[in-house]
Structures are given as C-alpha cells and as structure tokens.
Length: 425
Image (tube, rainbow, N blue to C red):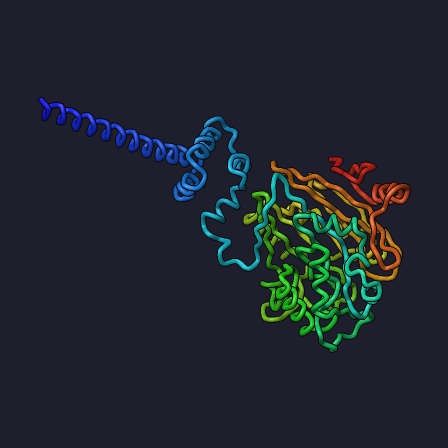
C-alpha cells in the first residue's frame, strides 16, 4: 500500500511539472507571437530589437506597442511614452552605439530637459573682460551676477559661443582684433556651468592654424565639448550628442559671419571651421543628423554686426535649415540682440548678442528651452545687461523695456511679460 501511495505522489508531481513546463512553453510561444504580430504591422521593426526590448523592459512594453499598432495610434513617439526613451535612443542602446563614441554624453534628468543658450563669450587675456575678472578677485562672480550663474549651472545643458582662441602662440593673423586666452582660463567655463561651445566663428582662427588646433586640443583636455571646427571638414561638421530625458540631441555649428573672409573653411586635409556661405552642405548634415537624433540644434554665426536688423540670408537660409530637419536654430555674431521667429512651429533665435564680451553697456539675455516628457518645447527669454564688465539679470522697468524691444525685433512670436514666449503660427 505504501509503495502505491508513493508512486501516486511521484506521478502527480510529474504531472504538475509538465503543467508548469507547458505554461512556460505557451508563454514563450505567446511572446514570439507578439513579436511576429508587431513585425506584421511594421516591418521596419527588427526582431532582435524587439527581443532586446522584451529582455530589458519587459513583456508589458511589447504588449502596449502591439496594442498601439492594432488600434492605429502607433508612432515612434510612443516608445518614449511607454519606456521613457525614444525609439532612436533605444536603437542606439540595442546596437551599443555609445560605447566607442567620444562625441556623446549621457546625463541624468527627470521628467524634462532644460537647455540654455547665451551669445558671444570672450575670456581673452588681451581684451576687455579678463583684466576685470583678475582685479576684482571674485572669480566668475566678478563678471556674472549670482542669479545669472545660478541659471547657467542649473541648466541640464548650457551652450555658449567661444569667441576667442585658446593658445600660447603669439603668431596672430593680420586682422583688426585678435583674441586669445591662456588654456587655464577654461576653468572659468566650469565655474559658469558651460557644457558645450560653438567654434564656427570669426575669432577662433585669430592665431592661425596652430591657434585653432590648440583651441580644440585644450577644450578637449578640459572636457568641454565643442562643435564647428576641426583639423578637416569631417571633424568640423561633426555633431556632438547629448542623451538626456530619454531623448537624443544633436548639436552642430557653422558660420557665414565674415564679409571679408579670413577664417578658412575646413577641407578634406586642411584645418578650419564649418562654412555655410553655401547652405547646401549644412542642409545635408542636418538631414543626416535628423536620421540619428530626436532633436537637431544648429548654432550659426551670421548677421550684420552692431545691428538689430536681419540680413536676407538669415531669413532665407534659416527657413531652409528648418525645412531640412533642424528643430532649433541659435544665432550669434551681431553683438546685439536680434529677434525670434517661429517657422513651421520651430524657433529661429537670430542673435543672442554679446553675453560677456567687452567694455560696452548693452542688452543681452539667456534663452532657456525646456523639453517636457512628451517632447514639446517651452521657451523663455531671461533679459540681462552687460554693464561695467559684468552681466546681470534685468528687473523692473528695465526688464519690461527689453521685453518690449524683443517683441519689436521678433516675427510670428508672442512674448509675454515674464519672458515666456511661443509661436504665433
């Protein structure tokens, strides 16, 4: 009798085990069925990629993707809604694209990403600002107010135009103004919170080819990402990428600033900057970057110096770059503020003026853009003034005045009293 009971227990346990194995097999079959069904709706989705999503983010993520395809609500945006990372970022992670890239930084953010921009910065030892930086003995707070530094350091990505060479060379080229800084001045960028600088401008080559290559070398040594110049055209037009908030941002920089051109265009085997006097190559790069990134941000040196008025080339090519795929265009070079324009719901900030540059008293500002969890952009202009070799935030009547001035410079833009603004089209 005891042997019969023992045998019965063994048979029951085997049956239960068979049931578990059967359920597991059915679940694996169902998962394969989900993947096959997703591909039947969208053949562009790769089986290996979907298996990666299953392994990393769970079965429920695939079920939601499948449901969106069935009910017709699917778009690439849904990946970020479900997983918190865009389709482009997920594909990059699947392919290990970031492992061997020197031109990408991944930063942690919460539900939104804040990117701020300022115009021209000069830390040149042989120009106006740095003697006052040294004599005041307050570090960065001698040339920027506490409130300005707080905004810059609290931005997830802080971008500026580097309007000088970083070199110990004395071999300057023949021009009216030549700006250079000692390499150790780059520590000031760290104190400001600068995360990326544009180099496609008319002063980065003030000390010739050696000065340009020194600038890139020292920026790299100080871990300050830079775009717009290089030892050849491939480097000069190369983007720098930030991964933040589950989105991928591509930054590129180009120049058409000089009327009397002395800063050379980078060529196949020749150092220089990325020119956009002919817009076609920049348009091509924008199109290529739009395939790789969720947002393409173009930093352009252009416009008439010391004028609020726009040149026809700015108004015409800016729209061409938006049509090519740019999501945001940020201009510098005019040394004065120019207006905003919304075109096809994308912002062109024509010129952000001098931020901390010379001895003049002039209006400037910080452009702050927040990309929310759903990918929409919110815009804010923070009015500032450069005065007595220091840049501070404007308040009261002076803030109201500059907001009104920016309204008069801008096109298709609703600029509110608090500095927030949006497109009028």
